[in-house]
Structures are given as structure tokens and as C-alpha cells.
Amino acid sequence: MARARAIHERVITLDTHNDIDPSNFTPDCNYTMRLTNQVNLPKMKEGGFDVSFMIVYVEQDQSPDAFTATGYERAYKAAIAKFDAVHRLTEQIAPKEIALALTPADVVRIAKSGKKVAVIGIENGYPIGTNIQRVKEFWQRGGRYLSLAHNGHSQLADSHTGEANNQWSFGGLSPLGRQVIQEMNKWGIMVDVSHPSKGSMMQTIGLSKAPVIASHSAVRTLANVSRNMDDEMLMAMKTNGGVVQMVALSGFVKADPPERGAAINALRQEFGLTAGRGAGGGRATTPPCPVEGAASGAGRAGGRGDAALDALTSDRRAAYDRRMADIDRRWPAAGRATVKDYVDH
Image (cartoon, rainbow, N blue to C red; front, top):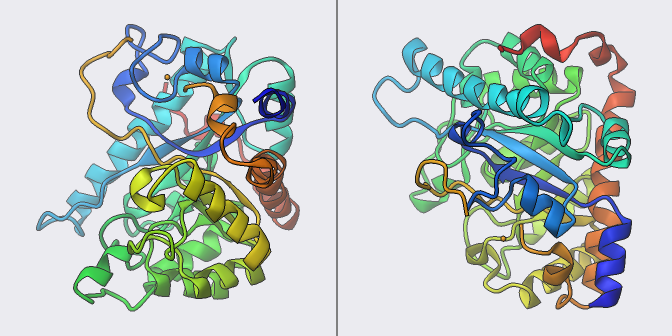
């Protein structure tokens, strides 16, 4: 335990998937308080948790007008509410405690200053609608990764949920989805493949000019659920140079910590893949301002075994930094815009 704690305190710890609720980003109810949700500033400090990817998640609408201008506008407004929530936290509610990072260098700089770090990920490209310019807008608002689909086919890509009845909208990516990936490459947004179908993922790897990520996935041999990755997908990730972040929800890994540690070791030893951590938690409905852990991160890591612990600590942030830095290098033009151009205050 002492060794685990020492490593945990030495590195910059990062979780690539933490869901948020805008109702917890108000003057009267916010992350400066010890809420009952999984991640907030008091718990981050207690757990030694440095960097949280806060997720702009929008559910895949299944209503009759889902794929009309009206449906897309609803989704867009829901996404903007979450973008704005993160900016309120970092710019108005607690700017002395947490700051928004747009680059790997920002992550290091902010962490060294003693503040916690927020990064924005986007789960489900549905709010893009049919407006390709929203990719640039979401980048300007701070989004640094985006998945093209969630639980249900979007206008951009098939979802893993199609496996249930073998019903697919596109057999992978839609023509618009392919354009979105090209636009993401242009602006430096990482492509997240955790929820799209296997066909979508394999086509994404073939199309993207930059390595992809799986922000919160697991291994199908451990839990045979449709959004876990099989061996072919894992080998494709290895060839692509991508990063797989292990989801922490028990339904995807059966048990934690032993099988999650085994999954991390399998990724390293059998596939030569880098493994990190992407919790994918926090979406459960909670009562208004549920003031009450992140429990001690070092305590959670203590039972995983040395090899798994080393994988979590040494690879977790470095791998994401490499992917983000690589995208920054390839598309330097993306640095021309500023976040404030698209932030609503």
C-alpha cells in the first residue's frame, strides 16, 4: 500500500471519462462541495486525483423527430449546457481550484500550479446534427475527444447496440461520419471508439490520420458485452498506435480489482497496448444538490499487483499526452482559435 501511495502521489493521475450534470455547476450546488457524486473537488483532493475529462454526453434520441432539425437542435442545446457548465466551474465558480486544459502542456502546467485539471470530452456526435461546422465549434469550446455514436445509431455511425438484433444503419460509418472524422483530424480532436460498433471502429482506424482512443472500454473475453473489444479490435488498436482506457464499471470487467488488473496486463503482454483508466461513471440520477468517496486512488490501486499498478501509473497520463501532443503537432493550424470565441457566459 505504501508503494502504491508513493507512486500515486508522484504522477499526474488522469481519468478519461467522468460524466457531469449541469445542475451540479451552479452557484448554490457545485463541485466545490462534497456532493454524493463520484467526482468533485473535495474528493479529487482527498483521492489524489489530478485530471478529470468532464464529458459532454447527450443521449441518443429515439423519438420520431430525432433525425430532423428539431431533434438535432434539442441535442445541440443539451451539449452546450454541459460545455457551459465546465466553463462556469473553471472560470467563475472555482478558478483558483481548477482550470481547463486544452493541450498536454496545459495539463502539466496546471497540475504543477497546484490546481486540479478539467479536460472536455464529447460522448456521442449526435449534437453535431448535419452541420459540419459544429466540429470546429466544439473544438473551440474546449472539446478534445469525440465519439461518433453512443447507445443507439446516430447520423454519423452505427452503435455497438446493433449487435442485439443485427440491425445497422450504415454498416459502420455514414458518409457524414467520414467527413466528421476528417474535420476532427483537421482541428485536433481525438476520435473515441468506445461506443460505436466494431464496423464503425475498424473503418475509423482506416480513415483517421491520427491514432484513435477508447476512452472507457474493456476486453470481450472477460465480459461478453457488445461494447467490449475483441482480439481483432485490440490488435487494430495496437497497429493504429491508439490507447485503450479500461472502464471501471463492474458489468464490463466482472470484478474489480483482480479482473481489471488482469485486463490491463493482458493488453500490455498479449497485445503490446498501453492501458489507462476511464471510469465511465457518474451518469446515475441523483437528488438536487446531493451534498454528502473520489475514494483514495492509492487505496483502489493497492490490490492490483505490481505490473498492473505500474501500467496504471506510468502509462495512464503519458499515453494520452502522446496522443494529444501528436495531434497538436500534425495540425498546428488548430491553435489559431480561442475557446472564448464560443463560450456562453
